[in-house]
Length: 611
Image 1 (cartoon, rainbow, N blue to C red):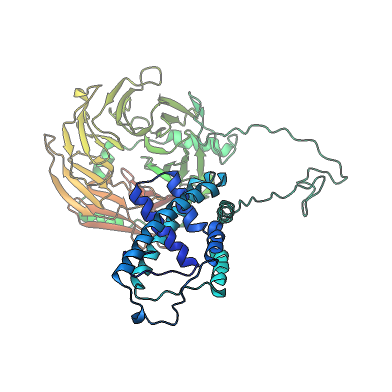
Image 2: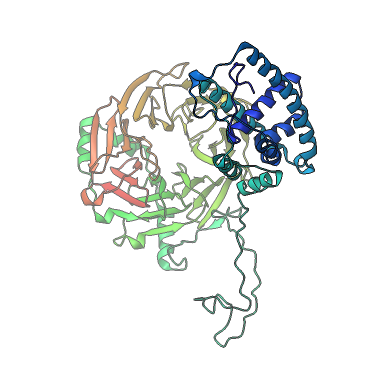
């Protein structure tokens, strides 16, 4: 047969290369004839992998013929004439045609139905292998065109046939199926451990096995649904009795305590005017205020959110509103601190605002987040309900009239309520929707009581009660100088000519409110650390009722202190307590006539500085 179209012909040994060349040439013939489909794939498979099926027949016919042994000749000695080459070429063409017909018949006879049952995956694998054989044979033909051919059939050829049959994979369809099955990983299923029947586990107590010590099984206990109790249940509406939580209400000491609070007198305005002094005398009086162990005591159970000092000039009475809803009363005139402290529970949530009534000092009004505003009457020993709204949460309140008959209440949702205590019921007289999303503090102007100021998230608004719209009220003045959350805003206590604000940007701002018009100028900005963190009550700078140009505020500095600043920004005084003041007093207040300062911390302690 011709190799690569060359005139030099060669005969290969009946081994692997011989049958691969046959397969490659047959593939070329099929490609030129345009045959395709399943017949072409079957013939490629037969010629490339199943040559051993009809190899024995060709070997038998080749053994009876004679071949020239050209192993002893050199390549230069082999010369052929032109006629011989033409004759050989004609013979080869005839031989090709004969072989073509023979191979087709043999293929049709030897192909079994098992071939047709092979999967598409095996067919694609076999087609790829036959193409690899074709490319490999072409490479070898171009590389070894000048090699001599040995025309002999001997023992080595038979050994090559045996070795080819052993090493060539995929000799039959059955063999291919076995190979495909071997390549697939076996499905490994985890065996479940067998359960022990009537077996007792090791190291299990009789209680877990529900068996009593005698070995008798215990009856199954019925499961009852657990009810989750509310942490802060709302107290029932109506008046509540003044029942102290830390003492027995039937004791004679408690009765004398109530009588003391009911008989205290109000400070007169004449005495208030006499107490006014210049800044030098004010500093001297502040220097004489001290603290000791007798003026420090834990009054409430939780953090203190509000503090009030009774205006009495005879006795020192302090009230504190706690985060737990408690209201603690402390009479410092008692020699024993424990005997002078009484704690009540008029609310279920934090008490954020606490004032003694300017008309009757025997009344103390407390406002809470739980949506209730109550008045503690010491003469009747009850907490009377003034205003109640279970759908809202209150933040602050103040007295609109000097007789304390009308109140203004700020809500956390931005609403404002006008409450008249003279009417029956516990509802509001008017509900106003302000322009703020939240209201933290509400404070009424001390002279022009139609004006009140509100502290929102980042804005300060001043409203006129004569021009309030229930749907949407617009403020007269809006202060937008604050960059972070605002904690409080208050008018100065005597004239209302100043406004002090506390902001989370570590600044105290003082505005000039002597002329309430479209704008209020900023006078002073005081740098002060107001970052109290999560566990401490926020600072609120308040005015000293005796000296309206000075503000009082807590401090985060060490050692712990309470500071007083002038409206110009200068520091007037710092209260140090040594070992008696080792915590931060976030909420502070000053006595209206006496030099007494009371501060509350976040653990329920009250610290009192007095001279």
